[in-house]
Image 1 (cartoon, rainbow, N blue to C red):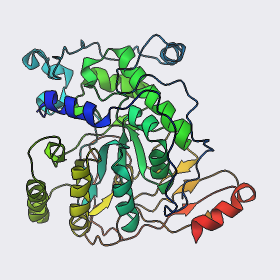
Image 2 (cartoon, helix red, strand yellow; image 1 turned 45 degrees about the vertical axis):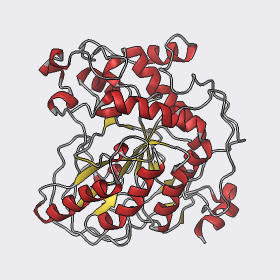
Image 3 (cartoon, helix red, strand yellow; image 1 turned 180 degrees about the horizontal axis):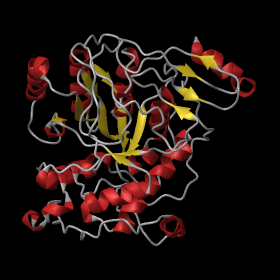
Image 4 (cartoon, rainbow, N blue to C red; image 1 turned 60 degrees about the vertical axis):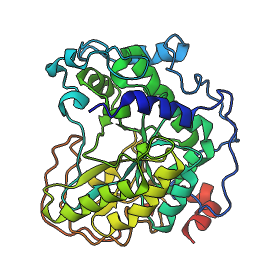
Length: 398
C-alpha cells in the first residue's frame, strides 16, 4: 500500500527540486483570462520568510513557535512517529498498531474524504505547481473545468505565477505539505511547520488559507489527523489511483497502461455504488499529457468537479467571505460589501451528462446520497467591491 515510497520520494524530490532563493515570478501569459477570484497585489517577489525548498520545514523559527503556541493539541493522539528508511519506506510496517488507523497499512478511514456522491468524479491533481502545470491549466480553461489542486509549499514559492493563475481561476487549492515527506515520519512540530509554511505561501499569493489537505503517499494516521483537526483541516485521500507517477521519468509505465486504467473504470461505471476521488499528478509532462488525454472521457461519464464541490462545501478556505461553486448551486466569488456582479463559470466540464446524488458538507467520507440529475453547468457569481475593481471586473466578465 505504500506505493513504493522509496521510488516516489526520490522522484518527487528530483522533479520539484529548485534553488531555495528562487522566488521571482515569471510573467503570466497574456492569453490567460482575468481572475474570477480577485487576487491580492503581488510585486513578483515573495516577501515571506520561507524555509529551504524541498527540505523538511524547521521547527525553531519564531513563526513556528508562534503557530505552536496558538494551537490546542491536548486531544491529539499520541501514536509514535513512524521510522522511515532513507529510501522513504517505513522501517517496520508490521509494527504500526492497527488502532493508529493508518490508511496506507489498513485502509482505515477516520473522517477522511475518499469518494464523491454517485455519478460524480472528484477531480484532483497533486504536487503542483510545476513547470508543466501551465499546459494543464490551459486545458482546464478550455473545457471550463475546475479541479482540486493539492499544492506542495516548496513548489508554490518556486512557481508563484502559476499558483496565482490557478487560485484566480477558481480551482480549489489545498495543501500537500511543504516538502512532500511521509506525514507519519514527522514529529508533531515538523508536521505543523510543513502545513503552516505552505498555508503562508498560498495566503501571500492568493489571499486565502486552505482547509483541505492530502497526505503525500496517502500516509496518514490518527496522530496526523488530530494535528489536522487542530488546525481546521479535512483530509482527502482517494479511491481511484491512476499510477500516472510511474510514467517516465518516474518509471516505465506507459501512457497506454494509464489509459487502460481509465477505460476499466469507465467500463464499470454503470455498476458504481458511489462516485470517486481520483489521484492524478501535475508532476511531469507525461502526467499532464495523461490528464489531458483522459479528462474528456471522464467528463462524458461522470460529472467532474473539485472535491469541495462534490460535498457541497462552498467555503473550502478559512476566509468565509470567499465562496467556490458547489454541486448544489453555490456561487463562486468574494463578498466584500453590498455590491454584487455576476460571471458565468462552471464547476465542471460542460460535456458531462451523468446523473449524481446530492451530499451534505459533512467533512467526512460518509456522504448521504439521493437520486437526482446534476446539471451540466453550475452558474457562479463573483462578488467584488465595485468602486475598487470596476475596470478589472469588466475584463473579468467579458
